[in-house]
Amino acid sequence: MANFKTFKADILNTSEANNVKSKTVLYQRNNPDGVMEMRVDSEFEVAKVKHTSAFVTNRDGQWQLTRKTAIKMEFQEAIAMAAQQTMAGVQKGEESPMILSLSETIANGKSYYLIKGVIAEESRQKVKEMLQNNPQFKELLKTLPPNSIPIAKLTLFRIGKGDGILYSTQQYDDKGNKMSEIAYENVQINLPLADNIFAIPRELKIKIAKTVADYTSMLAEDLQ
Image (cartoon, rainbow, N blue to C red; front, side):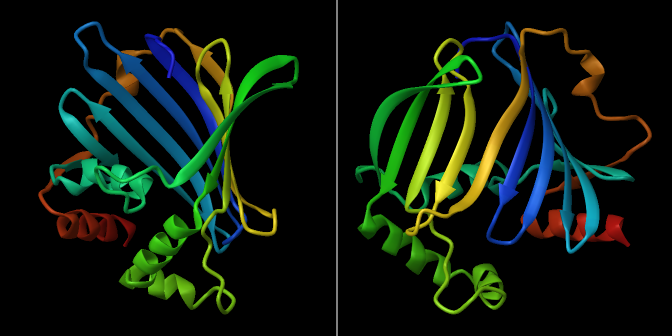
């Protein structure tokens, strides 16, 4: 990511596998003392039911905001979860699961770098085995066609040449069908961001989640 003080973008996340679309507004501020603040406001629909979610990282920690509460996440998994998913089982010292190539492209009059990542078959098999041993994924498999495990063969990353921002990530299966896309739209850099964007609303009840179980239970209580 290029050097910037503040960042705002609309993010459209589309999954062809389960027909889920979500829209997110991302705010980020890099402070002079090195502290990064972030807020993610999401709207998504599952089974024709609309949901909203807000996640905040500020000087006091990481927070999940609900209609009634602000849940402070004090468990390690809250930090490590995304990194684990990104690594997809790759350990230190192993080669990258992708064979990468770089080209350039132009879209809507703007120049981009296009990184093409082809996932090696050995890596895809490793991820497949890892997913099949995951209890939560076993439940998802029941809703998918037989022998259909959504593991990408090809990933395309579109990065702005001038600003270094990742504008989209697209994943494709073996047959060239698009599985998912994450697209950054209405990107704004170095715009004024008010302090209250990253603050916890006073009307929310503060709860502390020490474990994943605490976090899950608190979310369930709020949905009742």
